[in-house]
Image 1: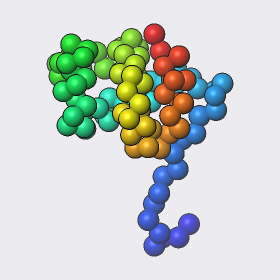
Image 2: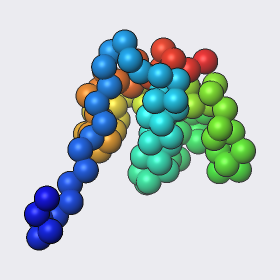
Image 3: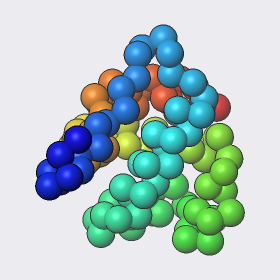
Image 4: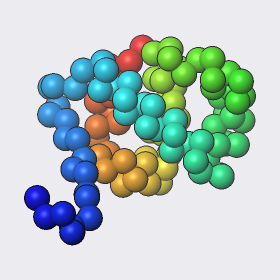
Length: 102
């Protein structure tokens, strides 16, 4: 390890059959952070889901809500590709994660 080299974390890789429910929840939580951090996606998410900031805080731990978050990301290809690039994941991981959530 070179002490003068900038730390670059390696993105977690997911094998198609090895994705767990906890992995799927982690992907969805990352998607929530991505949505909330985007000035155009956040209002669109709230408008399409009927969810508000308070609902977001109270429902963040529910599997069904996290599934809905992934549905939102999967429903728009440019958002999916932006999220995948930002998260350092292949786009197909979102579909694999969605299959694990209610």
